[in-house]
Image 1 (cartoon, rainbow, N blue to C red):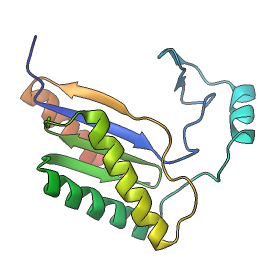
Image 2 (image 1 turned 120 degrees about the vertical axis):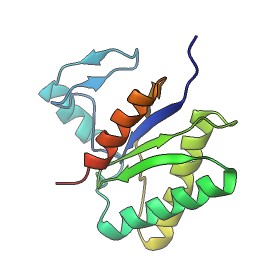
Image 3 (image 1 turned 30 degrees about the vertical axis):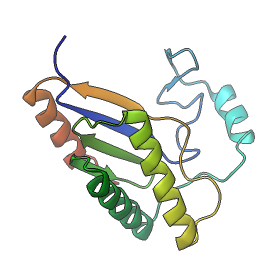
Image 4 (image 1 turned 90 degrees about the vertical axis):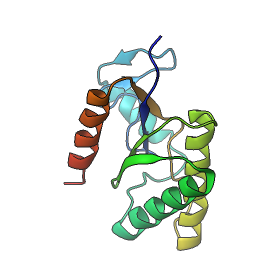
Amino acid sequence: MSEILAYMATWNTYGTWLPGDERGYVNSQGQTLKGNNELLQISKEQQKYPTVKLNLQEKIIAEEIISAEAEKIGHTIIKMSITSNHVHLLAKPHQQSIDKIIGRYKSMTTRALWKYGRKGRIWAHGYHKRYCFTVNEINAKIDYVQKHKDN
C-alpha cells in the first residue's frame, strides 16, 4: 500500500448542503445520489437552526483558530481555504486521527464564533476526506484550494 503524503478534508457550515441538494448528496450508506426537490424541502423543514453563512470576520476568526490549534498540536497545514459555507484543509498526516483533528478544529472554531456572537450550530455533521499519495496529487489539491474562494 502506498504512503499517505497528505489529505484534504472538507466540511460544510450547517444547512448549506442538505439531503436532496441539486448538486447531489451522500446518503447514510455512503451512496452519492442525485438531487431531489421533495427531499430537500423536507430537509429544510427539519433543520433545528438557521442555515449558516460565515461573514468575512467569522472566516478570519475560523482561519486564525485552526492555524493556532494546528501549530499547538504540531499539525502541518499545507493549504486552507475558508469560504462562507465550507472549509477546505489540505494537511500532512498527524499522530492523531483525522476524525479527532477535524472534530477538534470544528469544536474550537464553534466556541470562538459563539464568543464573537454567532448563535446555535455552526458546522454540519461529519466531513469529507480525500487522500494524496503523490506530489502531483498534492499540487492539484493546492491549486484547487487556492482557486476555491467565495464568488
